[in-house]
Length: 269
Image 1 (cartoon, rainbow, N blue to C red):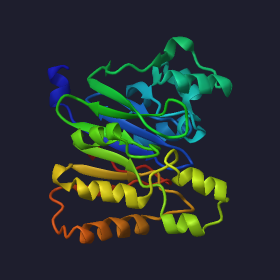
Image 2: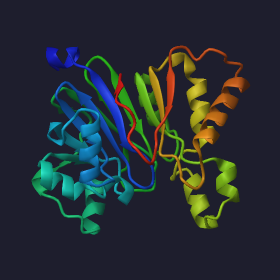
Image 3: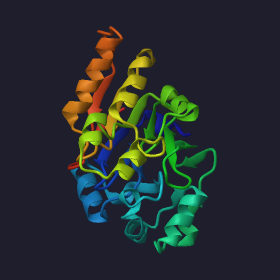
């Protein structure tokens, strides 16, 4: 970790968040990393430019898992940028089975700690129903952020990384009532709620409220379902959990909802 990284702004932007494509940008100084590339390179390039960054600043890509809404744009991106892609061995195997060809020299199997420029990254395994699915804890030596999307359930390991981060990106994928009463087939409903799919509003909000004394700088709710959730449902659940615990002061923590339709502002962490 160098002095420049400690003096540089540590920033975060959600390029897109949802089943229509996921991509997150974390930056420090003149370098950045992308977590997931589930949208086109053209869109990523345009949305980065809007927040003052060029695609050439991206030094690496981190993949949470192999589902198409997280990896669709990876082959195109690495052809354009020639940057390393970090994922689990199982994730790379799934991509190969799906004929998603990439330069093998750029495919890097994750290790317990990954150092990329001024970033220190700790991957952790999650319970999503994709082989070798991961979350990522990213630090620049001063501040930290954790990406916990498509985690299935809040395992002790996932909770540990969430608790030690300064900033949290965590999924609130579905409202249980909307999902149960919706048009999805029963098998898909069971898959989403079954511990290897997604976190719902209740589970995520309850965890955040139960650990509110951690005083995170920012909590970002991500990967909202288009059909089974809404921003109003998420925030209603969040405030209900606050009231249940008789909590009237959430400290300086700021809560944000990440859009499936557009990039977020650039957040200084």
